[in-house]
Length: 219
Ligand SMILES: NC(=O)c1ccc[n+]([C@@H]2O[C@H](COP(=O)([O-])OP(=O)(O)OC[C@H]3O[C@@H](n4cnc5c(N)ncnc54)[C@H](OP(=O)(O)O)[C@@H]3O)[C@@H](O)[C@H]2O)c1
Image (cartoon, rainbow, N blue to C red; front, side, top):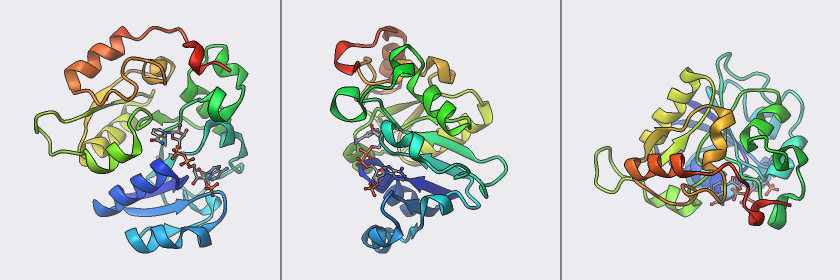
């Protein structure tokens, strides 16, 4: 697949490494420009590009930047993508440590719904609740005992299946976590977040989640 990755930090660089190793064609962008991505590019074979070039011809675009920076993405950054492009949001809202106040999220809008509203395009929420290092090294073959399960939420069943297939390729069991408005179940502070749980445990944790933002995750 052709995959554009916007953000080349902990998660963006990890996904670049893993997707390239699987044989996907990856374009990767950060905020400072492609010349700052030479090392990642030579290590992985990914093509470093500007944000406005990341989605060109892409079947999948991953937005993996701090929540507070999402409104800075240039208008039209998805122009030139495949007609049925699937957009993945890996983001989390960390108001106290990083993002400051985002009122709509504080008022109860699911974080990925807010991202989708900001970019004016549907997103699938995935990879938000696993540490980058675990995403890099803890993938296992399908059926292996203790395989970590990852929740995938979104409104479009076709797009969700594309992402669930990628999760499986990366060595994790994908779990359908419902639609985007329900994706608060996998946000920071919920039982599944960072749990590295197997499928059955993850499903239980998603059900157990309470729709109350813990104080640590409020501005
Ligand atoms: N760290 C984790 O283990 C983890 C796990 C799951 C989910 N997440 C979530 O995933 C998102 C990314 O996390 P991270 O830890 O990978 O972040 P990070 O290490 O801080 O990296 C952020 C990346 O976003 C880029 N960026 C910022 N603003 C941008 C813009 N306007 N256009 C293009 N690129 C921009 C930065 O580019 P420059 O360096 O050039 O500024 C940098 O490459 C966050 O929402 C985070 O909460 C993180």
